[in-house]
Length: 478
Image (cartoon, rainbow, N blue to C red; front, top):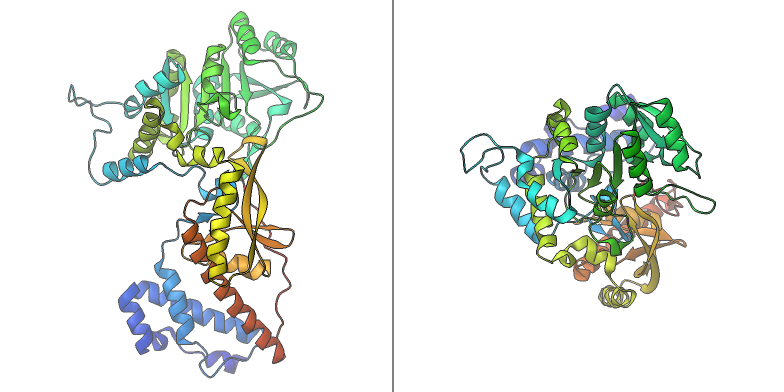
């Protein structure tokens, strides 16, 4: 074995080959060198597993393939064929073209991020968005940080440190990435007081906790990706606001989704503020349809305490976030919210989606890809409206799911699809360009077929046979 391993060429030997030198000229020496090392590592692993290598133990073709991959950016645009509109793992809401243009404009040069052009003095970066936020949400004041979990942490640290927060047991949720509400409270320095039961919490439970802990605040938390149904009870925000006023306590609402349109079916920040909440915290990249952001809305005194807290600087929004969020909010102000890509995907009708799927299927069939149009059920995602199912349509492909899924992900652009009933399904709800999808799928089918043929040939020679996969295990947050 040692002798076989010593027979592998060195990195410099492979780099000296004409084809690899040409690769280095195209993609840069660093990317070419990384590809060579990866190809040698693959050959070493094959030898150690008992495989016989070809006459060329580190083939040029494999180095070139890896080099092309190394030259691509790691963060890439993908085609979302999952039917999940606000897919957390895929970046949630896509930005409107005007938001993208504003980001490019602001990022490409200097800006008045923290300067008041009227006075010439230092300004406050959230001040650029506060007027439109106040107008749209009906808030007395507003502040923006880089995400909603950060906004919650900041609010608890600024308003509740050294005190306590009263939370219903049914709202002690875990959000994406393993972050749990009790842990966020602990990190903020705010003590947790649990009230009620998992399924039923009454106003009297909050009142009793305030009697025993007069320094405490009330925290209402959106349940994100799950819902309680059946034998349940919870006080309204109006009831909690009345209780908070009576007991001279603060009422915070970690609302999450950020919807401005009540017709979407989600309780809105505007409604929460009207019912008397002191501070509402929402996301920018969920039902609002903008960039990732944590938006703090409410009474001026509460917002100012958060704005001036040291943690606010650690969580501050950068110029690109602010530019994208301002452009998104202006679309709402100008009555153009229906142009937002996420809202268009959410509101697409089943008939429209069937037509889209049919166009995609015809294009695939023209390319020799066997497929059928099928019904598909999408989701809102992003911790919003977890019980809402979105009736739609997709294309089912007749192929082995495992290799095809991997080939779809390896494409340019990559395609993220589903496995349903043993078949790869491409839900078209979030696909705006079906021609691009068809091209990507056709290229992936070629790669998957080649991979399958290689494995069959290897099996015929006595090597390991083709993997019997029913699809990749998915550990994705929607």
